[in-house]
Image (tube, rainbow, N blue to C red):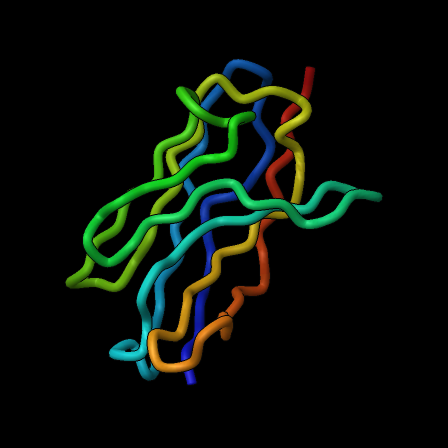
Length: 118
């Protein structure tokens, strides 16, 4: 099993920045790609960004140019630097990690709240 623990959420004004972190522990050898999703009240969970173990990244159109995902493979930690935050970025942000041995199987963190005030 893999445990994911997010940190770094909080309240920020529009235009501000936050950095989220997600630390993995447990059977970390099973982790392949990692990423961030978010879920706003009344909406479905959506992809924010992903990063492979080799460092290839993918972003939702809504965050391109504002958010940066990065990864420390030694610490098995993934980060999300969020700049130029907008009120519509308000959501619970979840970290996830893909199991390299089980196609379609993902581990999830408990989520961290990000609130952007206008």
